[in-house]
Image (cartoon, rainbow, N blue to C red; front, side, top):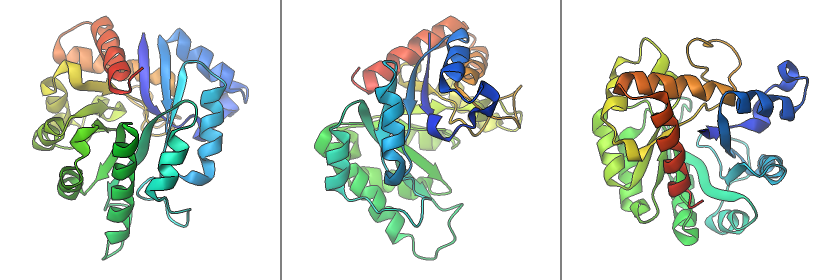
Length: 257
């Protein structure tokens, strides 16, 4: 069975699923998806994210504020620690750095936000979910400076080079591949997918964004994680069943399930 290790179920337009999350989940079940991590991107919607997890035995959630979320409640470590102690919360994030979407000469605010999440992760022993874009050097630097390797986590929706992957692996992080690995333009990323140790790999949809080939350009949803598993199996010359089994076991081990 498959695990979608990173999705935003609260953000998916359910109009294609009779406006019912249960219909979406049934379709995912038919595609072998058995577990989900519904990821929080701001504190204002944490209750919505957690509510979904509380209503389903096989859905877990996180708490955090995305690096590009602006005009939202700024998290401090104490609040993150408090919220992460509530039911079904298994991770801190998504957090990290994104220098692509934000035009700001001084990114100190984003870096400080990132450090608060790492502090909360270490205090709770709950893994980090890391987003990085156009900021790989600073992301790795801050993870190392703050001792994030004590807890570890996952570099979600990984789209960087092998050197960055190696540095993240050395810091006790897993590497998660999304639908990007199915894109014909992702040649360098496909090489990374071949090299990452199979026991340190996760797969995800990041739905409702980044639908994989052959669904590219359409609404993404958890059933499509199967295409990610199939592509990685093809790249590594192993069976789809092996990728499904191993990445689910990796998810359970990382998030202490």
